[in-house]
Image (cartoon, rainbow, N blue to C red):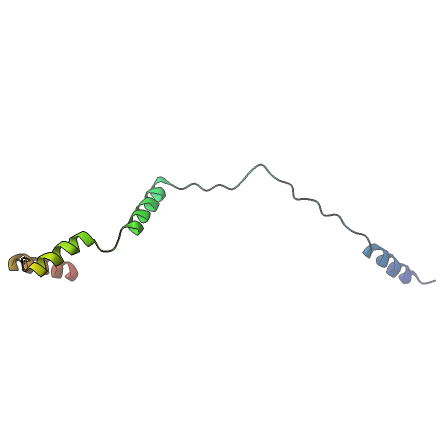
Length: 92
């Protein structure tokens, strides 16, 4: 009589058994996310910027109308001071 043969037959019979899978146990705790007030303010500001057009059409239209009519005048001193101011900001 062979003893090792018994172990092989026993292992064959165990493969036919079906194991039941238990349903996951639900716990009372859930994950939560809390957004700070600064985060909420950032979201509101970001939404407002996204909804704002890139070009302010009413200003562009009024300047175009003045240029077409020949009434748009640029003060040379104001223009020069703005150029110098911008240049100084870029140098820093």
